[in-house]
Amino acid sequence: DRWVDFQLIANRSFLEYSGVWYRKQTKANYVGIRDLRSVFV
Figure (cartoon, rainbow, N blue to C red):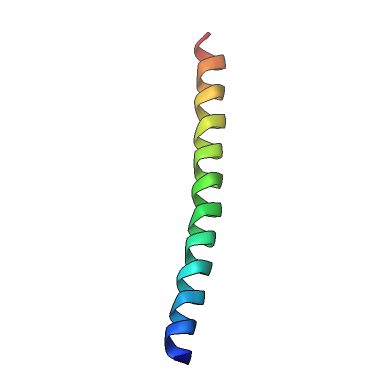
């Protein structure tokens, strides 16, 4: 069914996009924590 294929593609692209966004957020948080630590130390 074409609709099912479309849903699978949409879900896959959404998961990939959210995964990239999540990595960017955690990377930014890690850099922020490291900067804070260097300021306090």
